[in-house]
Length: 304
Ligand SMILES: O=C(O)CCC(=O)C(=O)O
Image 1 (cartoon, rainbow, N blue to C red):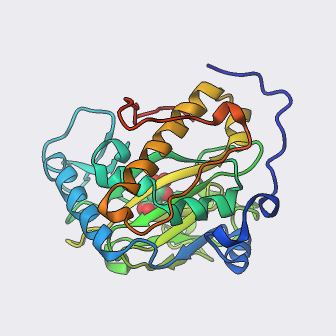
Image 2: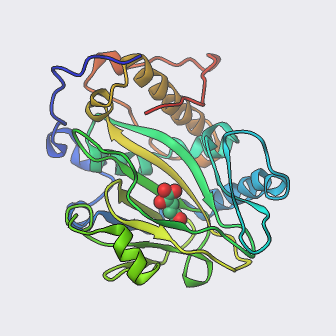
């Protein structure tokens, strides 16, 4: 599966690659992301689509929240108060319902990813939903995503299915920590617990995006709320980065087939009505794929 990693071109610069009329972000938003390592983009998903996703998310977690599912897509942790195994993450959301597949094909989200990563962006990695269970929602402790990127840091795109604030465990970030790395995270946590100095909360509304660099410090606290807080994440890295990490072109094509299927299905669904579908156009001919409506496409592509 691995390719050799020689002759990998540097990531193409964004300005040379993004037609400005299709840019998903303003220059100010891009500059803010680069400076702070995260960006809050309000109101990207229409309320009607959010309602469909909320409904599907509730169905996906209804049984899984009570009966532990022995499938690697469902992640549990033990509630220390009750000893109950508690659901906190569901993986491969694109394979769970059509609505989540349509979400992966959302043109504005894909344009935003392209604005931050360039034309050779590959979206859809680690498409999972983080959920805080009622009564005791597990913390996502302070961390940077363990990516160790070689060419260009990846980004993670958080799509909010619920309003998030102090009461239900909103995200916190340390702005600038993706470049200012002179900290000892363990020591900071020992001294300050969850409230790290310089950390700021990111309150959001359902339908907002919060995009973070894989390298920025972020996390969310434990909750005791009955209000749900569900965020769907997927990653976006460049082809150059994934090649440098040893992923071969067959893997890239498998991933591009998933995104192509998502774009095509969205274009024929009610949620996609009136939208201009995103056009995948990587500079690497080896990554271009053709997907016919009745082709079987494996939606759970692992790795990367
Ligand atoms: O939204 C959150 O709670 C943070 C999720 C996160 O950073 C992760 O799953 O790695």
